[in-house]
Image (cartoon, rainbow, N blue to C red; front, side):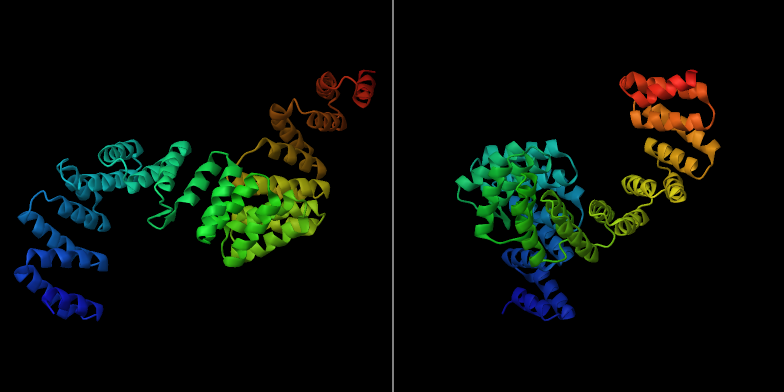
Length: 419
């Protein structure tokens, strides 16, 4: 057993002190082949500093050697020293056999930095050198997919299928094709690809993608079946619950929709959208107490959550709970959020608690946004009449009558006011 084998053996046994002794012997007395082999092994075992030291030593002896440049760059990347890695790779001779590999690594680094155009240039150059290299098509597909260029991504993924490459770097290519088709709106074609991917390998993210695509395509029963399969495989797969609840809703199965939300909350208790959707379903079921509880939970998670606040206010208006409306408005305003509907809600609530001065102020604020809204104009006009502001009320009613000339009730009110 040579020093390299002894070092690896002692590392696997956890004897770091003994391993360090063998490392020093290889570094000082080992052949170039020993140092290269040990550097690779150390890299894979996570001893990056030692691997870097060996690669650097070899590179001094063999300057510009492509394989050493790429391996040292990969080590530097693992050490979060991307700038030095990029500098090293950029200096590699274009005629070196490892140059395409260097381009791939550079493309990956530029992509990580969000420099997608530069990354694309590197990959296109690599493909011009090795036009039939599958890993380059895969890298281009991944880049185009990340940047939303799904048709181009699809073309490169399909090249892999033509080359009988169904999996690259642990990624199922049929799944990627399905995702690209789905993102481009070709849902039914995507479902076929998902089915093929699942036949090759049952994988939970692929199954979820299939279910989500079925949902987008409007095949809600199929979506329900697949979402439930995801849930059975992994009950902690948080994303499944809200979508499954929505699929049940589309099928008008409101009880199962609400039950799914309650189940999902147990696994994802800080998901405000889950509580909000559950609240809306409870309202549809006529379970107002349950709806209020869920909506309040949603607002407790995010006190600036306007959708939850406005839905609660609608419920409270129905129940004539004006003080509760004002409480919700106050919560939202304290969060620095604004919405014209809140002015209207506040106007109605202040009127309900007989705080007419503030009600008038809020009606006036809301008028700017709702002067084309018949229901608002009617409420505002009625309020002005009650306050004895007949001239102002007549103007509001006239606006409403212009929109609804056959509204006999408003016409009668106007005639009475004019008298």
